[in-house]
Amino acid sequence: MSAEQKLDRFKQSILNEISRQEEEMHDRMEQERKSAFEQAENEILAQCYTYIKGETARLQTEAHRSGSERTLEMKKSVLRKRTELCDGLFEELREKLKQFLKSEEYIGYLKKELDEIRKMIPDETNMEIYLSREDAGKLAPENMKVCEKKFPLGGFELIARDEKKFFDARLDSRLTQMRQDFINLFDITV
Image (cartoon, rainbow, N blue to C red; front, side, top):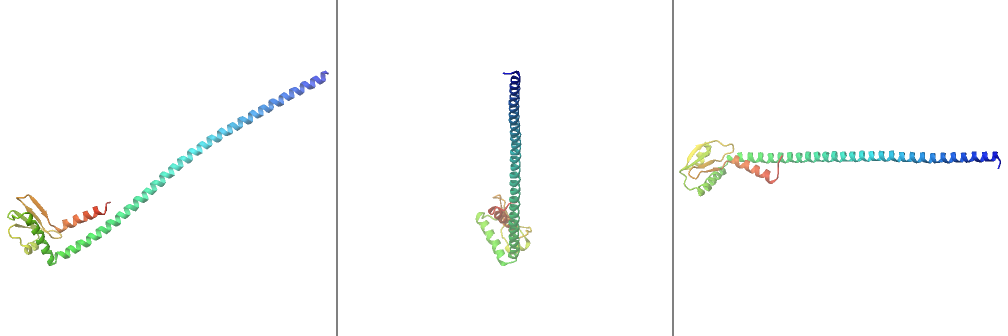
């Protein structure tokens, strides 16, 4: 083989080697580019996932808070309405009691209440009864000390000194107690 052919062959072999190395370098660069792209893509996906997870949690918290606030407002509204109805009902009762004070049945009611107490404590000599002047004139308890005291809705208070007992037959205190029992029964709390 001639020197020129050897030189062509040598040249061809160098060109083939350069081409092979160029191809390897190109493949390596392509692999590194793909790897860097995949790594960047994974980082971006991780950031997106973290962001979406955080926003989802924030939105759920906000929705829960908003729902809780709406529920609380609705409960408050229901309680306000219940309270209004309760107040209205007991204001009507108060007015009816004021009418009752003017009736003949009122003195019958006072006598009945006093008779119930007399059954429990027969000795009236150490009893003091507190009631209005008008009621004292109509009720006229005989053996007990009568003291004047005005009550908004009538009735009386009685103290049995020997027995150390106090009886409250005031209509305003009974109405207050009824209102409290009504509130407790129907769970009307604010």
